[in-house]
Length: 141
Image (cartoon, rainbow, N blue to C red; front, side):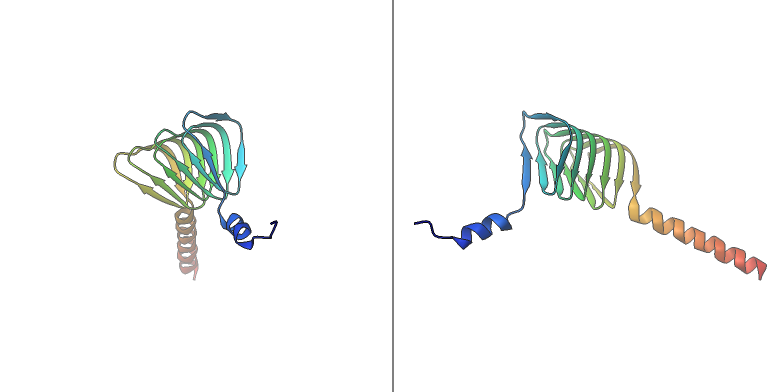
């Protein structure tokens, strides 16, 4: 009657954690999670996650977002910092500061930001410094 059902236990542990903020919901404050977010409502505050963030057409984030990957169809205003990819669909509207590893933008998306891409900036700075040092050492030799 009260048997230990291992299949049910493994299924619960194997599922990924996803947080859903439904349309018509407004949250004011900070959110921290290791799971993914699906936002169709409004969030005013700071979101920090190691998971993926998906913002639906009616979703809106005002504040800061730190994470790995984000997929936007809705709106964002504030500071966005991602170690992975920012994907903007044609309905997306993004304003503020953006720091990303990769960027994918569909035609029609609004992207009014100051943007910095992490990997490319380091390579360019290091490369130009090495070239300058090499040129200076050739002049003195």
